[in-house]
Length: 217
Length: 141
Image (cartoon, chains in turn brown, yellow):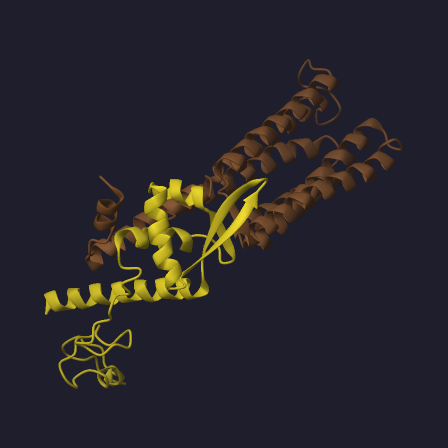
């Protein structure tokens, strides 16, 4: 078929019902292509926190007695690998799914990405200054509570940028369990973050995915 | 103490009758401000399969964003030539804005729905709905 014939087919008049159906179908296709499945972003982080903080908890124990025959180095390596894996997976999905868009969204995304970077660097500077002054369990608690704080604030901020209440509730939830965990001490914090934090990510991802699946609504 | 209405119909419903009764207009007619018999006309720039798909896709972007030509082309599954023709018609009506930019050193075209285009699409959707409503009430009466 030549271009002219294609163009002629495109000009075929539509009935109102056909037009409405076409709008709904195309809207659903466009949204699905422009916005990636949210579970692909929340899921990996939920699992990483569950396994990573879980490994730290099992190694350090509630009262300083380890539940598993793992050295501290191995537990930290598991933790680090989980986070790295989550970062790579989500970065890949973001790269694959982000449409080639210019304008307001791109500026928002750039500033938000930089905010993550700045927050984490600042956290490193503060944590590095104080960690040498603390006992080993307290040092671990300082680092994990600082990082959860940064994550919580970034989710609250992201929610404000994209007007996403589920994201806001996740940020609020992370800030809350972080405070409770810090008050409860070095044994409890990783347990709480693994279960309630990792679980929070998974629940948020599932909620957002359900809505994404009905994007044509 | 008021008695129950013998037929079971709710009492005190007088206010609801004020708009009814005059003429034989159905309950749905005139809801969108159009008098019966004056069905809205569909914007011919949008009311064609390919351009309707283009406009619907661009409308899915947040206002203030534009999308690259290759991305839009792959989303729609149209040929470059065909898409260009339709974008040209939309641009003539000032519904889309076509901006030539660069990505690295390769020239690339970005397309966005203008404010006018967004409004035209919203009007079009409203017109389609009222046509469908009119068809429905026409069938049931």
